[in-house]
Length: 70
Image (cartoon, rainbow, N blue to C red):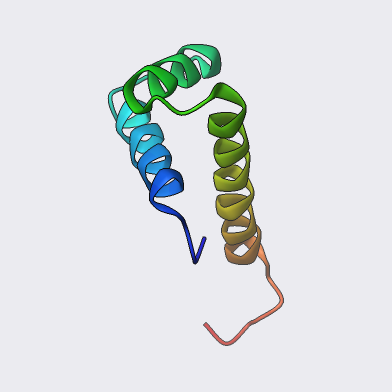
């Protein structure tokens, strides 16, 4: 997630913050982020989707058994 705008970074920080507080409901999470950042809900959802793909790529990489030279 290189080259983020200030808005994207603010939303990412807010998503992480509320998840770390234990927010487990996606709709509640989005509502809290929208309220705290004043960023439109579709933008928050897009950034959350990008974050999910970012972490999924890394998880897939770590689960890959292709390299036996650990």
